[in-house]
Image (cartoon, rainbow, N blue to C red):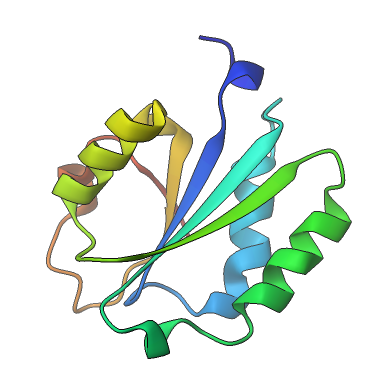
Length: 121
C-alpha cells in the first residue's frame, strides 16, 4: 500500500483538544504525506456536542489544501481502542495513518493502547 493510495484520518474524540485546533491537526496529518484524502472523524455522545465552528474549520482546510479531499464524519459512540480497530478495518486504513489530538486528563486510555494511532501535540 502506497501513501497516496490510502487516506489519512484525524480522529477528534469529544474530550480531545478544542476543535479550533483542527487546522493544525490537518496540517500535521498532511505534512510529509502524499495523501489525497483527509477524513476527519468526530466522535460524540450527544449531537449537541459537535462544535458549531467545526464546519468552518473544515472549510478552511479545504481552502488551504485544495489538492486534498477533506471529508467530515460525525459518529455517535465511545472513543477508544475498539472504535479505532473497527474504523481501521471498515475504512481499510492502517492505524498508523490515523492521528489524534492531545486528549484531556479524563481520557481513560493510554496512547499506547490505541494500536499505533499517532499523537498530535
